[in-house]
Image (cartoon, rainbow, N blue to C red; front, side, top):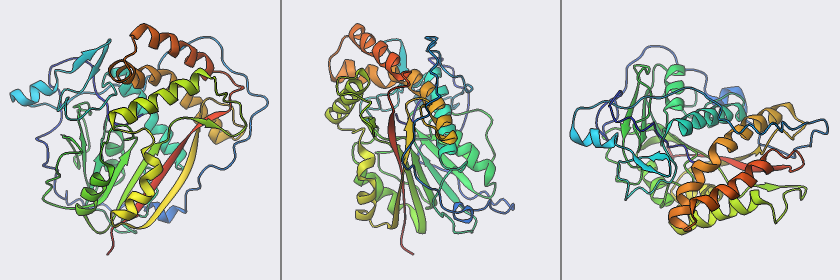
Length: 376
């Protein structure tokens, strides 16, 4: 479930900054850099998850969303920018308007989706031992410029800018959904990641998270990232892999959960924007010229079934992530790509919701963090 989403259908501009393809230059801040990820020790991936025999599922039937806060939008007075706020509406959800035809991003950009993305941000940080990133970007030296690909609500970029006041942070996305109040060293821009990158100054670190399903040509994106990094700069990608799986056979072949996730993969493949893209990041980064390429695999449990406290917590969060996200990820792919009527989609999703809270299904999504360095 990708990390580029947006705001409600309110068309009044409210926030942010300037034009696409003009990220800010170095801010010249004097504060020292926060300790690099490498100084905190390596982050371990997920091993075998043991089932918590005492876990009791919450079967109250509440499928409500977990509210994490609201977002505003970029402000501008031009007709072009105004049109960006006129989000497309379909099946009761809103979607990005900027380059709607060329950039076939299938996730909505309304308030429920934005709240889910903020929840997902906290899941990623917790998964990584409370770190925003795990690669040794900067190697203990201050980072001058950082680029956040598909920034979504901008929460990662804002947190990074707060932790690194000496760094200029630019976030780009298809939707103007980032907050009004941001650190002075953070800025957001509306752009399509798959367009030509025309940045006049290179970056020290490029970050992308939950972009699976939103990129058609990953090798080209990685090549552009390579060209726009300074020597010694890092790229880090974090993405889930679909479909979900289990290690003990409790996710049955006739499961509605598995059927739904497999259909999503089929639709994304047909669209040309695979939900299995993270399987290839390690190889593709090497082919793009990056060195010291490292891959770490984690697991996001379907619900709080694991015994381990950390992954039980992730499972609790992911349960709400799934409940609030299954319609968002399904509607456009099932209707526009697979040709399903909405009523049939909702019937399937009701079965998926029921299975998602089943404590006897020990399923999880693999999540891979892959990073590499541009040679010195």
